[in-house]
Image 1 (cartoon, rainbow, N blue to C red):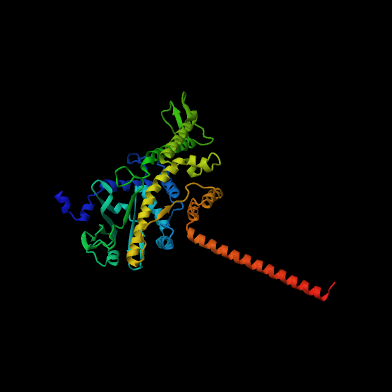
Image 2 (cartoon, rainbow, N blue to C red; image 1 turned 60 degrees about the horizontal axis):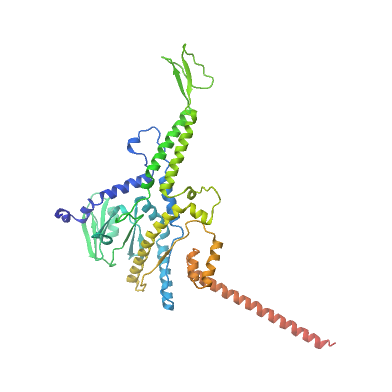
Amino acid sequence: MAQQTALTIPQQLGRMDTGRLRAYAELLSFYQGDQWPRQMRRRERRLVFNYAKAFVDKATAYLMSGMHSVVDAEDDAPETAERATRTEQTLRLVAEQNNLPQLDFDTELDAAVLGDGAFKVTWDPVERRVRVSAPDVQGLFVWWLGDDVTRLWRVASRYHMSADEVEIAFGTRPSTRHSDRVEVVEVWTAETFDLWVDGSIVDEKANPYGFIPFVIYPNLREPKQFWGASDIPAIRESVRELNRALSQLSMILELSGNPIAVLENVTETQDIAVQPGAVWELPERARAYLLDLLQGGGVQLHIDYVNLIYRTLHDLGEAPRTAFGESRANLSGVALNLELDPLLKKVQRKRLIRSAAYVRRNEMILRILEQETGVSYAPYRSRIVWGPVVPRDRSRLIVDEKSPVAAGIHSRRRAADELGVADPDAEFARWLEEQEQIRSETARSENGRVAAGREIERKATKLREVHPQ
């Protein structure tokens, strides 16, 4: 224990979480297509059908559809509503400046493959704006209090830069000779910030934010564990067996297309060629024939086995074939939801975790902006609105939302959220502007008709005076 505490933080990181980091490397390699076990890599044919990547990408696309943040007013006071609108516009501006839709999607892919995702929220003093990044979880290390994995008291981030980049970023020139690879370690607590470059500490100061600026969350949570679970282990064996079965079937079909000549009771062969019109001279009691690997329905057995693997793959991956565009009928509404129910449940589990992570990220953004600009955003509340996972009948949804709005059960804003409107307040303002323009045009037209009628009446009166009957 004394030896462990005597080590510097960078030295401690070299001994921490070795199993987790090794698992990360294996999962990433499998996702990229390295899917054959090492003892089977000497086979002549090793086809790879990367269903692991297809499943992860598909689930991520369903998960991230139509996600955005909204801020609800706490009460009906005008100043509260104005603050909520300003806060929501601020979050939207930060999202545009950091291209958060793309960053969130890329981070979700990482989380689905590795099992964990992370965001870092800091202030950029040069550009005078909040900067949101997604550090590689392979370089993150955490310390929590006792048996409560939700209470982090220290986070270390390890990454590598060139010597020139270190000098530009931190104003210090590392002494290492390897200018293309310098280890940088940031150590954050709620009170302090330490910067280590190439094993030496170069900066120690108070934490300028007052909180650890990292949001680290699991892909899927495991009970009583901080680090999460990847999507890949559930389908790994099915993917490997599918690659093996299809490689074997491919070999059988190739050999059947280039048949093997079988000679019985022949001790010597010369000029034996399998080709159209070939003539063989065989000794007495010898027999020659072509080996037919397709006889007896053997290929169909392989196909049936492949289909069985497909079934296990989709069952374990919680992504029915319908999610990949295959449908036995034109399904919609409740029938489509039932067909995709495993995927919907999986997405729902992930969205519960993501909502908490994105709300925490929004809170960090608002706290940093408040510190740097002096504008109050308290109580830092936001809500994550997710788009529908499956296609929805928009016309039916509009009809369903009209009744609650008319009855005062919920607001137009909530109805707009359900319909996937990204900025309900702006849309409502444009609607009011259009209504005012319509009223103005209608009033102008009505005034024109009244004026025209009066003019006609005036002319008729004048004619009656000139030509009395």
